[in-house]
Length: 71
Image (cartoon, rainbow, N blue to C red; front, side, top):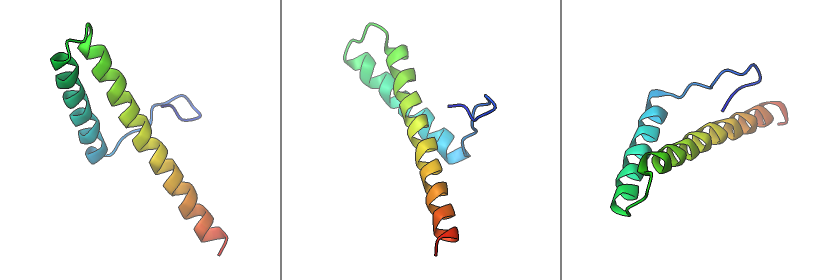
C-alpha cells in the first residue's frame, strides 16, 4: 500500500513478523494442497495480511483523531 506520495508504508517490527509468519503458513498450506504456484498464493495472502494491518492502523488513527477533537 502506498501513501499519497507513492512510498510504501513501513510496518513495525511486530507487523513485519506477522506478515512473514503469514507468508510461511500460506506457503506450507498451498504446498500441502498441491497448488500449482504456492509462492504466488503465499505472496498474495501475505499482501492481504499487510493491507489489513495498515488499514486497521489507519482506522485506529482516525478514531484517535476524532476522539481528541470531538469530545
